[in-house]
Image 1 (cartoon, helix red, strand yellow):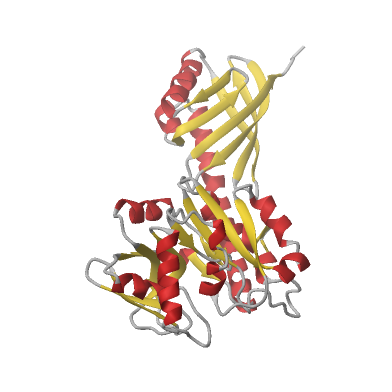
Image 2 (cartoon, rainbow, N blue to C red):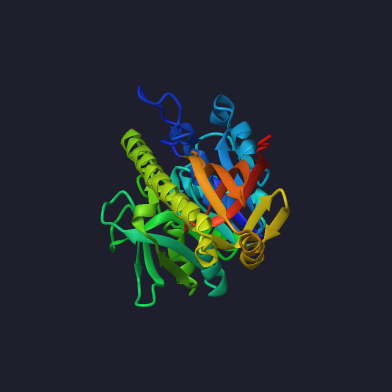
Length: 363
């Protein structure tokens, strides 16, 4: 089981402004709250996990954050923090009773979005049996935390708000156990390693290194990392989401048209290129799971017909990036009308299709 800890207790986390009447994590970004988008890569983990969000009690009550977290899923729980702390490390330590101490720990933030699948990176940390790990991207601004690395991308030094290299930390920290983080954090606090009067997570990596632990850095694509710390960042991120969604919708629209053409021409090999390996087709004849099984089923339809016309009357792409085809299907003179609802994955392959159709009574 992986502990995922989210300290939401920074002094700026709950700031509001004339533009935004709610904290940034509760701002709507093209139909979804920032906290929803921030939580998604962790909710999508393939591991057994538990997410614990450390919340200051006054803000939790004021903004109904416990209820918001419950709506995100039953694997997220909150931990109340009373009073101000001296930084993310202190907030994290106040939540230790909620953690499985012998299990891996990921510390992250819900004021940032990792807009990619993090499963393989977490698996790399586990497979390589590192003591700690971070995601990094190229930067030089002193607002970030930084690490120095060797030729194998193992961390040799970490620093907060100090560009000791061009490798900035993307707000995610992995520790092989919660106990290791606690030990490292306490050692750092005893040395009074503060930045601007606060204890940050990054310097705990130095304590791991001093104990001859291995700390792995994994480079990520900066264009898929968004850290929202003010209204400007929020506006920029929202525009980026809208632009990306519009581009994705256009791609899905185009792929849907290509699929319609391939199906109408009865080109089975072209048709199955649109399917993911675990593709699920549900239509009036039943449910068919797996690319090859669906291939056989569609091939049986093609082989049993002399003539087939698949005419799309309308194509829609929803905000959830599903495509909907309203169609007319003519098979050997019999006319059917119906709707296909298609779910696409990030590689623009079909994960699922639900087909609804009925025969038109010409009499």
